[in-house]
Length: 214
Image (tube, rainbow, N blue to C red; front, side):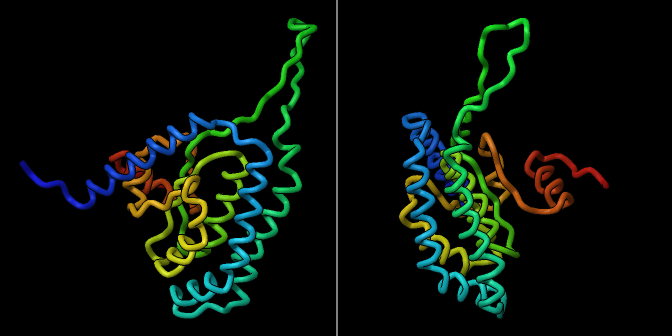
């Protein structure tokens, strides 16, 4: 009997976490407006509380980074995004009417927007706060749970983000896997911010297929 490797154990554990998140979504699939607003408000408070720690962590990861750069490029866009999302969320959640056409008259048709479930977010190294918290805001506003994969090239920032998101442990999980190990999980949606060439290589490696030349 061969012992399993640490990597395979990590993957197995993350599959279990993903399954538990899916089960929780099925038990409460449609968070209401008040719950989503509460999540966004708590995220904003956490972001403002931890902004100095985040700036210090990003500076440590990069060798040096101006605090003003971090505040303007990473922290401020997230705060503004939360404010905008909270203002618009009630309208975004309303059903959207469609024209049923003459053949279905006098029926009425509307689109009801629903959460996707457990979504994946893969974060690059260059703007680790804005490119993690920005998609996270959208995912929480849409009523989803999240598995947030942070870049291994920003370890100090990752620890600061993990501390900031500690109160969201029931809705947000931070897997300690490589991106290629996380992508095979059956996410209904996965957000990845990068240019096209690395995205193609990453997807090809995940599917065990040779990348297409461009």
